[in-house]
Each structure stands twice: as structure tokens, then as C-alpha cells.
Amino acid sequence: MIDPNDYAFLCQLLHRHIGLALGPGKEYLVQSRLAPVAASLGHTGLPALVSSLRMLPSQRDVKLVCEAMTTNESLFFRDGAPFDLLRDRALPELMQARAASRRLRIWCAAASTGQEPYSVAMTLAGIPALSGWRVEIIGTDYSAAALDRARAGVFTHFEVQRGLPIQMLVKHFAREGDDWRISPALRQAVSFREGNLLESFGHLGTFDLVLCRNVLIYFDLPTKRQVLDRMAGQLAPDGYLFLGAAETVLGVSERWERVSGASTSVYRPATGAALPLSRAS
Image 1 (cartoon, rainbow, N blue to C red):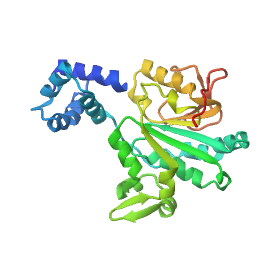
Image 2: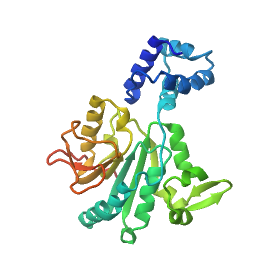
Image 3: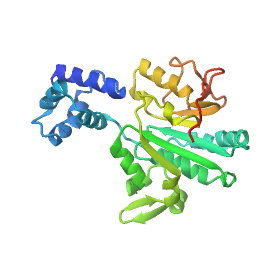
Image 4: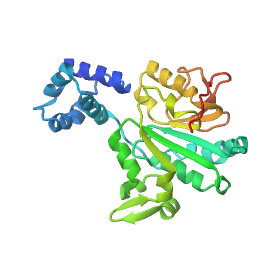
């Protein structure tokens, strides 16, 4: 069993670096995920890893510890309803508003192994009216390992069975041994970058759509508020923010208002809340 002082130290480290809020009762999770990290770094066990982190933590070791504690659970077209709203309401409204520039920018925060941004790309590929538009989809994640998988675009049979309609599989994937590789066109449609939601993302520019789904649930209230408030400055005043089904801005941030009539967690900047930066080139 992990020493209580070591657990408290690791909780503080994880909260400071990636915003992860662990409370009592998660000791087993820390032990199971970090014991392999300790072994990979040549330590005799978790106590030795913690001692090393206390004395002179290297950026590499902290990164490995934080990556091991991130949850990279992701599915194609997760929850369904957000992608229906994206296709049937958000995109048509934005296309009408952007008819002159014919440009859209979309950010998938916490993109994990790529299922979400690729689901967005497949949704856009099914809209003929977007032909000739300049569409940029950016996926960011803290985990370098997850992003490597996302860039490769190779998914197991189990992964493509989770949420991916058969017609999408046939249209956009090719069989590769026991796995499935997404088409070159869709891989080129999405760019992936490392990014920490606790750090500035102003360099990304402003977006028309932001998907930050199923990550805020791991943060405490002050961290949620900070992330949401900064995201309001990255979204166009008429843009959309998609959160996870169990996530809300209610009681967290006043810079957002729920999209009326939406059956899922979708928000727009409250009047006067968005402070757009220069759009990235």
C-alpha cells in the first residue's frame, strides 16, 4: 500500500502539473499506474520514484508520471447527440456566417488517440457544401504517446466497433492486418499538437468550434473555471463550445450560456464574454 505522505505528494504534483484532482480512495489507482513507471526508470518501487521526484525531479520523469495518470479513454462519435447537433445546427449556422471567408477552425482539446477529431473530420466530409472551404481541425493532448497513435491513425477492431457506424468504417478506413487505418485524406485533415490545458493556449488563435469533452470532470472547481474562462477568449463570439454529457458551466463560469433547445452540453460565449485574439494563419 502506498505511504500516505507519498500519496499526498503525488496528488499535489499531479494537480500542479495537469490539474488532476485526486481525493481519498484513489491510492490503488496511483499504485497500479505508477509502479510500471517506477520500474521503467530503474527504481526499486514506488517509494524510490517518489524520493527521486522529491529531491530533483526531471521534466522527463514528471512527464512520464503525469502521462501515466491521464485517462485516454476515447470513442468514435461518443454520445452521438453532439455530432448530430454539430451536423444539423452548428455547422449550417457557421457556414452561413462564414460564407464570405469560407473558413472554419475547430479545436479538439484532450484529443487523446484521435477518435474525436477524426469523428469531426468524418462529419465534415459528409457535407458537400464544404467543398472548397479552408477547414482546420487541431487536436491537442498532454500525452505524447496518445498523440503518436492519433497521428498514425491506426485503430484496433475493438476500437472501430465502439461508436463508428459501419458505413463510416467502409468509407474512411482500410483493413491493415487485424487493425484499421484511417484514410490519408482524413489524417491530413487533422493536425495534432501537445498541449496542457493548464498552460496558455493563446498561440492557437481563435476558433469557431471547440470540443473540450470529458476532461473537466477530472479537475476541481477553480481549475475548471480557469480553463473555461480562458477558452472564452479563444472562441469567436458566435462560436460553439461542446462539453461532455456530464459536464456543465453552471456554477463554474459566467462567461458561457447554454445553447437553447440543445439536448447535449453545448454552449456559446455569453454576451460580451468572448475576447477574440487574432486568428492563426
